[in-house]
Image (cartoon, rainbow, N blue to C red; front, side, top):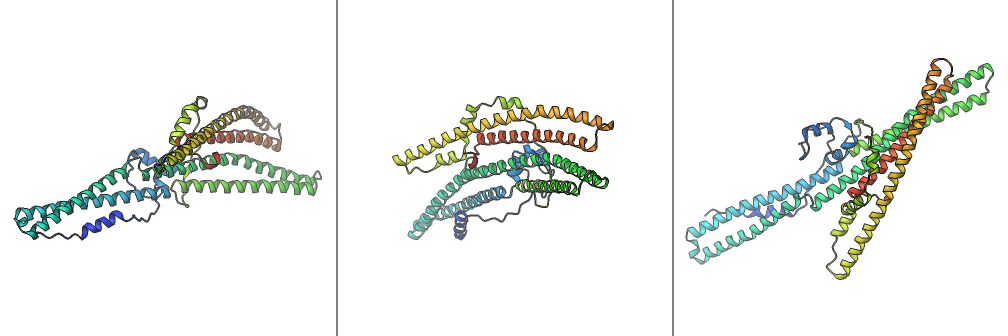
Length: 401
């Protein structure tokens, strides 16, 4: 009879019951050849790795490149691989032990008390290991389910980071849109300063006038520098959220164009029902243990009911924010159109020598102010709408509750 070493069986059980540890090194977009994720086409994967951050790609960039999300996902994969390893080894040992038992029986070994004891031990061990193998198989199936606790946690973490990335990209675009205005303020302040210096030479301005103009120029330059620092900080934050290293400088595209008609046809009632069903806090409440007591179940139901009411109230508030932001944005469109016409007239007058440089720059600044107001209003509208949509998906920040 062949003798089997039972030590690997116990090693497999130890692997099965020991938490997996992993060391994760982040690999950002375009930095390494990762396997193509399931459900992602080659074209989509190529676009995710093209060193350009697009708003409609934030979800996948966070899901497949954010270090924290990847760390959790890798831990899940290691857990699944560990359990699959245990299951495969258990099946192998079961087969070996069944062969041993069959050999004992076929050779007539069960005719003696010692042989029968050995046979029954082998059969009993096979029975226990088969039960363990079935448990491992169930664990594998459960871990791979999309609604498993681990996958649920990965999805929740990913969506929370996606929400943050959305807000950062909106802030980045808003700050970038205002940069042109501040540049024009610096240009105008510099022109005013030069005019005062010239005035001082010809006796039409005082030293106080020059110092005042210089102070305004320095203030404008300082504001521009602070804005540049803000833009750079937002760019770096967005890069880190989407898996880029701090040294990487990916291009960041503008915000997509919203369909105002779509905003006008929002179905608050239907969206509220979805938000209540998708809300992660409520899902955790529903999954919480009630201790199977009447009091526990009543308290659990009361908490869930209160949570659902709070979500409904929040959805109503977010819906009103979208409506107000839409109205404000539409108002800026009218002002922007008028400012564009006025700036066109000033441009023609300046070309004909009918306007001074300062007056012309003032006209340009007025146009840029209108343009900046439009861009800011659009960013606020986009933020209001995405915040509403995230609530529908189940993500509501504490500040919105």
